[in-house]
Amino acid sequence: MEKFKIDLFEKETGNLFPSFQELNKTDCNIFYHHFKEKMLVYDFHMSVFDNFQSNTIFIEKYNALDEKFNILDVFTELNLSSNIIYIDWDEFHTIDKFQTYDFSKYFSDIWYPYSDNIIIFPQDMNIIIMIRHDGAIYYFEK
Image: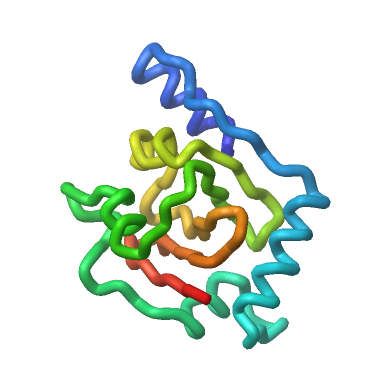
């Protein structure tokens, strides 16, 4: 998680930022390996996000920029029921682990439109969701 997001949240709300854990490089590499296995098709000349977008399903029904958007609606529709989720920020180099409740409650303080492309997944990676910087949402289920 970028420090400026934490600082801004705490300054604006007067509360501590929700608890999360940044994964170490070894764990990030393990998730990256699993991601490549799940996706089956992986072009090493494309970014993780481009690969994901070209090999997954676009969800027209939701856009993260919509005023009434609730990430839990997407999780419910895709049957993602894990209490813990992981957020990949940059090609599996930085991954944060959140309680699903905290991530959903503070989604607008965590995901910044126009700059953040994120990949969201539970530990087993049975469902993988990408929210693009423009709010478009894609998913992969295996």
